[in-house]
Image (cartoon, rainbow, N blue to C red):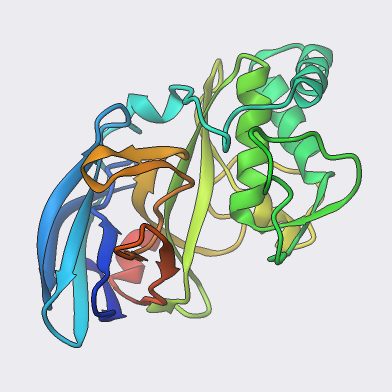
Length: 276
């Protein structure tokens, strides 16, 4: 059995917005159960992505996701460009990305060249201010910039799409080998599709490990992944939410329309099955 439990402490007056899991070639959700609240299912109709909107009815809310090894292909919607400030590239960045891709010869070689180009723009970290804050598009970086997996992958996807290459964004939980049954927060990775087929990329983990040559693969850092959602720039009309950066772990949506961290606790059973 592969089971991910996510626990949050209730916040009175707020609604917990939680992903419902995702089917990927590596792992696929089979069931989601919830205790501690009442839920309704809402959707981003263009992304084909659903989330749970949960009203707390107890001090603690718990979501339990059950998975199996192997599932359907990544959803087609993840490769579809969205008109979002988190995926649009500034003109200067688009020009630079096309130049890198052209020099590499296009296709999978261009994707790898862009991955390594992007890696050269970042040092891994969690800055107080993100490089794209205050912008209506992803700006071109002109110096080494601190960024998290979210920040790095947003830049990578913007570059790929500007160069006419197919790339999508997946969020979920990454449980490292040294922990095996728990993790602290969400993680994300990029999926590309080209003449090399479907490939996964994790530039952030390469940087954390001090590896300079970026290559495709799910786990450059040993561990396992549990997919929960996809895409950036999400819209949930039923919630009055437009251009949400991402959903990767449960978050609180207040009655004023602001987002707050839910500080969830992640527990995994079945590490060995995912790692096999």
